[in-house]
Length: 237
Ligand code: G3P
Ligand code: MG
Image (cartoon, rainbow, N blue to C red; front, side, top):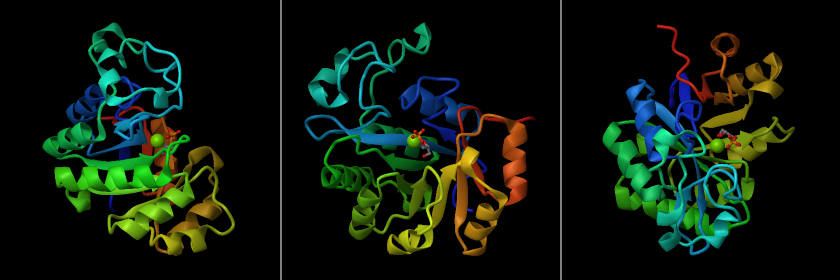
């Protein structure tokens, strides 16, 4: 299995502000082996970790993320909305997040979020950051809801990719073959046992998001799912 049974979603989003360095550190402290983070571009083409199109929900600012450039990151507080103890958290550069993840010995699923930014710009930025940090390929997996971006990435790089779907489309196999996917990722709430067995018998790894209940995680794993993205460590030991 490429990733782990439990993958920290957006770092460890239930216990620290999502897509921050503090969240990644906490995931490692809590024993997670893999994390998932969202990657997108600022207005000047800098790659950062961020989920939404707008700053409103997860920072102290309003407006579009793309209205920001790298020089503006210093003034954005990406932690206080979650808890005062995280008031020093900034929107991390992809490069610094990869450096930290590598130092901590974690694996990472980079989810490409185009959110209106240039697909080719995002793919190039991600390819370049991975190369610059010399991040080991065996601890990396790239996915995206944006299939065009995933095709572009797979044509540009030999880093393994996973096809990310809100629900499994009829032509999922064709799509997976085109990008040489190693895994399929879909919404745990839109998953049937039949779909799980179809994906598994076709030889793909299967990961479901977002599962915050240990009981549900156990059931999915029993049904054949390889791992789940969770906001919590979900460990019962
Ligand atoms: O990659 C799995 C999951 O993160 C997809 O949904 O909206 O949380 O990025 P979202
Ligand atoms: Mg995500």
